[in-house]
Length: 275
Image (cartoon, rainbow, N blue to C red; front, side):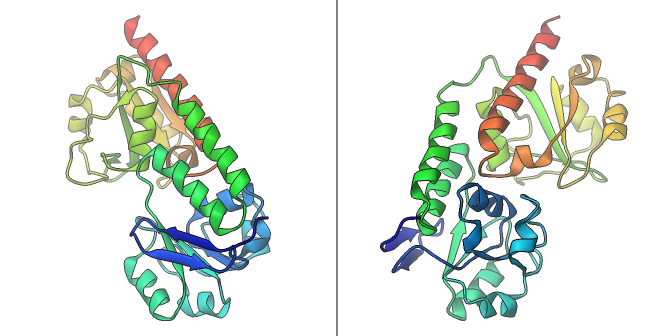
């Protein structure tokens, strides 16, 4: 692990200055917890959330400090972290402000594109003294991006909730990830990042591909069969797939596999539409 001073600015533009890489880290972001393990910095994690389920050892090797939106701030502070890693969407601003008011250094991330996620991986590597391994992972992500975007785009809807249905809008990491794989999002211009949609709106969008991730809503085979009854291209060509939720929404070591997986699903849907 590296040594020497660390000086970074987080997604808010707030300075994070450490005399040396953090030795005591609390992660309030499940995907970043997994990333720190992948970077070989697991021993520096002293606190994680109850949702930090990957890898399996994450919650046994570090103290569990509550949920992403319900963290136990006093327990976090008692762990005396050198840095707390948070995310603008995942965690509440009030909790970040209270931690900072108590003297904690909080590094807030906010990657909304794959390229930004690669940059934040490098920043996390610098924070914990794992810069070489972080650069390797970021390089693998950028190399995957260099493959280019398949064209023409395939109209793709990724649902994230049911009752009511909610879909990916624009301005979020998962939206950019799918665009990089050749998908076009009919709900990208909606005002909300994750707009509610009615079934007739879904049909009217005429998606060629529908993705049903296993989180945050646990879509499964019964949901897929239900949507196969719709009158839209994706249903007629059976291009409705239950997919690993973390692959769609988590930053970190999953990204290269995510790009390959969703590119393949987009290409498969395009071929089915051409038949």
